[in-house]
Amino acid sequence: MDQIADRVERLLVRHEELQRTNALLSEQVALLVRERDSLKSRLNAARARVEALLERLPPQTLSEPSEDPQA
Figure 1 (spheres, rainbow, N blue to C red):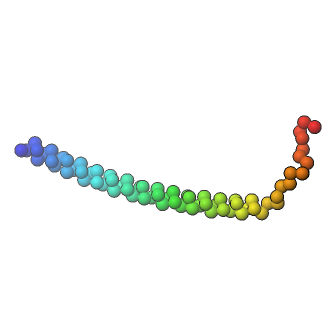
Figure 2 (figure 1 turned 180 degrees about the vertical axis):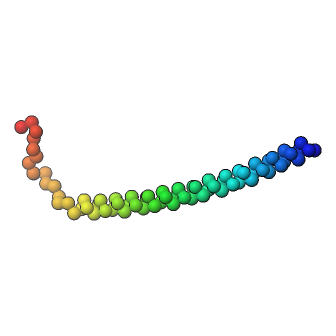
Figure 3 (figure 1 turned 30 degrees about the vertical axis):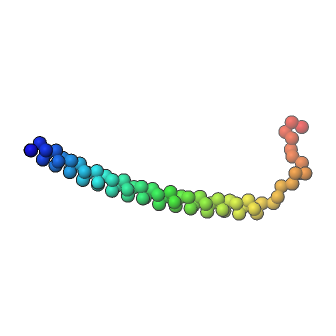
C-alpha cells in the first residue's frame, strides 16, 4: 500500500509540474501570436507604402533607347 501511495504522490507532483509548464508555454504561444500579428500588420503597411510609391513612378516607355554595353 505504501508503494502505491508513493507512486500516486509522485504522479500528483509530476502532474502539477506539467500544469505549470503548460501554463508557461501557453503564455509564450500567446506572446508569439501577438508578435506575429504585429509583424504581419507592419508588413502589410510597408507593402501598401511601397505600392503607393510604385504608383507614383512615371511609366516606362518601351521606345526609350537602352544603353548597350557591347556597342
